[in-house]
Length: 91
Image (cartoon, rainbow, N blue to C red; front, side, top):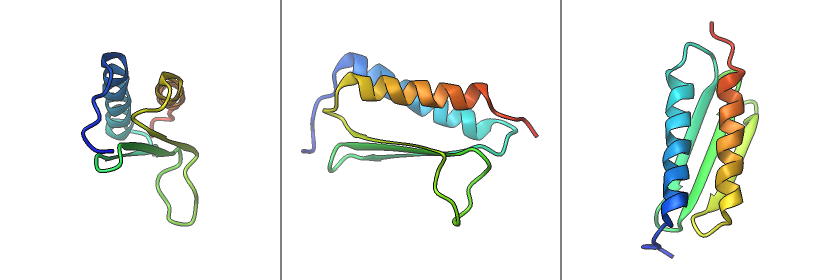
């Protein structure tokens, strides 16, 4: 699966996802976002804990998909992260 070329529109959405994860983590809120890209299997995984990370709880937002997934998975993830960013409670 490795070395799959990502389509330009998906690549742009991938960058938006990364930017949103960074924005969430750089905020003054408790929200904590995690992003994993497994290049060896072409998987993207995003988790958000809206009250801060705690090992006792599952993430409030979770999105896992493959590079080859339909572009709607990318857009859905951008939408979820945008909603988290808009609804953050700054400390």
